[in-house]
Length: 432
Ligand code: EPU
Image (tube, rainbow, N blue to C red; front, side, top):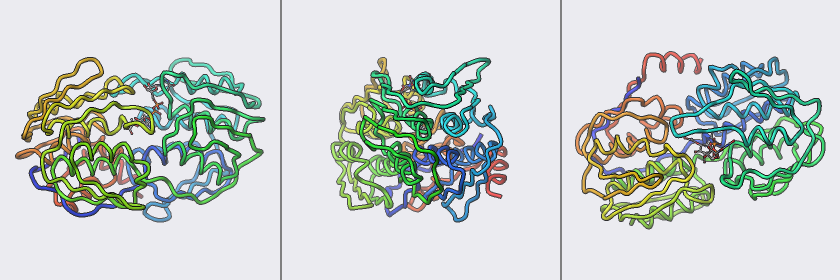
């Protein structure tokens, strides 16, 4: 297992540049499969989930190459397979996006079902009903989804009303851009990462209206062409560093961000007592005392993101007063609570609500990350804690955060990481 060691207690100070978004860039890589041409994607984060997606594209026949540190060229002129390898789908759920792209381009896709995961059950039923609505015959057998259509035909569909689904919205859009006729997706997700995918497709020649709204209208086109496109900044990474400032105290500026994507997060930081100021592409935060307690409920965009809920929990753990956090998206997103309790937090979970009585201090302890965002919450906690925190399972962090250790060191944190032998080998292979 990879581990991270942090000696906590230093306030953070300085600036960091935020990388491109993991969840914004993964759909772009899948979308490039729709284009029998070269696509150039800028602001690609150098993280393990992107590496895994590149492996997936290569396994399907596309040529992928970093032409600069964060600029990826994808040539999907020749797709040689419609079957996604299980060992790559298993690594991360975002790889299921190749289903929509392969179905849209070639009328056929065989993709293992991604299954559940540690943050809760993560079905793909909305994705599959979207494919069916477009006329595909979809079967699930022996853990593999097979979708086929002689020709996909546009249709009107309503994403389930209980949730808006980021993944299903993207997957159905990918399948629909080359379909015959008009597709209308009602109750579509409006996340900046979804808009990023819509704008990439538009730039490649797709006819999409209602970008960024919950009614997306797609008129199928004959074909798409290659283009150059810049991925969206990672609002989760930016939020993590800003919350870390609130937890460890200090004076931190995050650069290369889109503050307009972060309204609800900046509002929470202000309610917690941080001084926050933003400009066109930066956010500056100052924290000079213990945070105030707050109440927050996760919700699809523009609501508070579930991906920052664990970090918000750490802010609450050190706040003056009682914080209440309700999770509405993923039932097991509170996995970090037991680990945080080992560091001295006073937290109780009642169904989907965490009641957090703020304590003045956390204490370093050996803890374990169970997913990307739980891991980032433990890092943030370790920055403020007295003494050493050793986080095992830190390979999750490399899936979603580019150079987390280096960026935190730049802000004055005492942090080191040791990759597992397997991670090291895999990363060396990827970077060749
Ligand atoms: N859902 C269904 N059926 C479906 C699809 C979704 O019931 O077919 C439910 C899910 O179980 C969940 C809710 O709908 O309760 C919303 O899930 P959504 O489909 O929006 O999530 P996702 O597309 O699987 C993406 C991000 C997640 C992020 C969520 C919510 C990617 C690769 N993943 O997942 O990111 O938490 O949206 O914003 O974009 C992470 O980065 O750590 C991460 C988990």
